[in-house]
Length: 280
Ligand SMILES: [Zn+2]
Image (tube, rainbow, N blue to C red; front, side):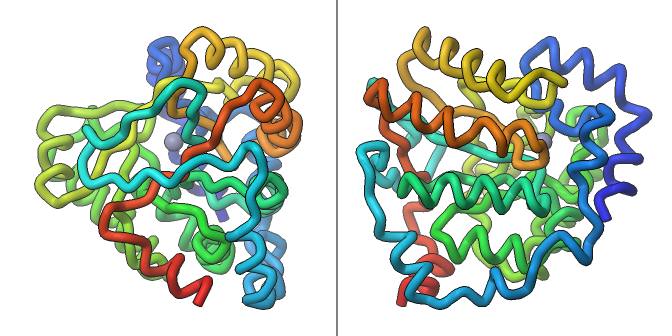
């Protein structure tokens, strides 16, 4: 499934490295561990998971723990304002089979909601999992179709790539796409203007977990906590593509909770029709 998507990224390795140095979203650097994360389509999602009882989904949506923060309703980029000890968790580049499922379970266990910036090609290959993310009360944003560097393309091609990604997500069953994140965080002023004119909020990154490097899950968690303590709050970038991210998330969430942080749920100001439908 995602193999072609990952393979297409190979020519841009050097660019990725350069962008990584700038703190960009380099999750899809074709490190060797990226490919095993990409599961065969048949195994990517058990249909039964999407058919869980509405009771279970309602319970997950309503559960609260000391980590559960407020819901932030956002209409423009200026509405994203975090107070001290508030974080927004974002997971990019999925949905990606087992790793995404483990992340969803870890979030449910703490009664918190995240935002998933999905790649259109990944959602096309895992539509049931993409819908399950929404059904479990999370917010989905788009992240292009094939994860190219939009800043390196013509404006017209970049606009078409964004539209293709949105189309793939809608075809996977996610109609509402109020948020966008630039692959590799590589933006242009013109593209930001294009998205803003369409009422789409670009969600930037304050803290890059760098979970795309081949480092241990413990290192991802401790380094991200260190950066968070320095900053005090922020939007954290993770990638549900990676096994190390799924592995470290429960202990990372425990650390957040112990240190008194709250996880803020990002929602569009106009509401989330899919979420309403899921808890009806
Ligand atoms: Zn990405």
